[in-house]
Length: 187
Image 1 (cartoon, helix red, strand yellow):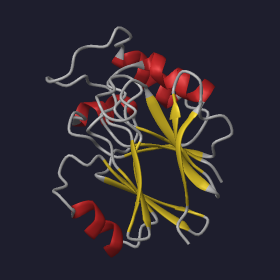
Image 2: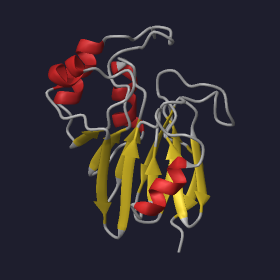
Image 3: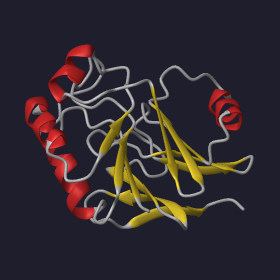
Image 4: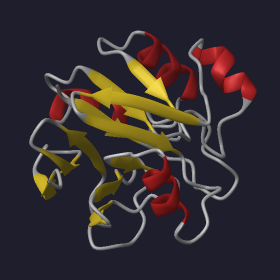
C-alpha cells in the first residue's frame, strides 16, 4: 500500500495537480493534513490561488482523500468540499497505524506523547510549512511541508509532499518527485 501525504495547499490547485502527476502516482490513499482552501490571514496569496477550483479538483480526486481540519479550515470549506474534515485522521496501512492532525494545537512534546498513547507508527502534522521527517522513540514523525508556501528549514527551498509505503516514509520534491529524505519503518 502507498499513501500520499500533503498539507497546507492553501487554495493552490496547481500544487495539487503537480502532487498527483509527480509524486502520488500509484498511491491508494491521500491524507491531507489541513489548511486546504483558504490562504489564511498570515500567508500571502499564492499566484495559483483558486480555492473554488481546488475544491473541484479534490472532489474529483482519482484517489480516496482523507482530510484533517487545519487552523485555516472553516465549516464552509468542508461544505464546499462536501468531504468530512475531522480534527484527526486514523488509517491502518497494513501493520502500520498512521495518525494525522494539523498540529496547530500541539505543544512541545505532545506529538510524541499522543503517538505513544495511540500506538501510532507514523504521526503526521502540517501547519509549519516546514518539511520534516524524524524517527523518535520507535516511531516516525512527518510534516510534508507545503506544496504552495514552503517556509525555511533544511528543505525550505523545495515545495514538498510525502509518501508512505510498506518500506519507508519519504519527503519528495513537488516539481520532480525526487526523494529529498527517506527513513525506513522502525523495527
